[in-house]
Length: 88
Image 1 (cartoon, one colour):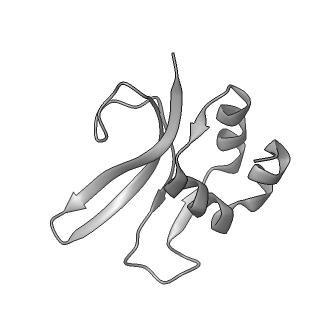
Image 2 (cartoon, one colour):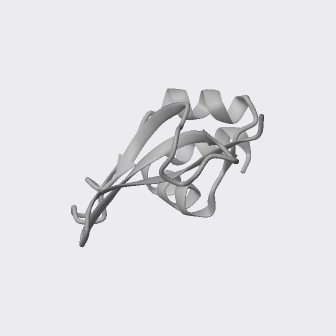
């Protein structure tokens, strides 16, 4: 099973928020996922807009999960040490 760490869209029209999740690459964007790793709310001020569970993120990266480009940018802001350990 190929895994991807990506954003899952939540919220209502004109006020979207996102969950950072681990999902099978075959499942739809807002479909079933294995585990929630955090959230991103673009309506909050910078610094308070991203939350990531660093220990679980490191676990899934060690299992071979790939990170989408958008999530990689968010992780660099919220938990850069996780990506540095992995060497990505």
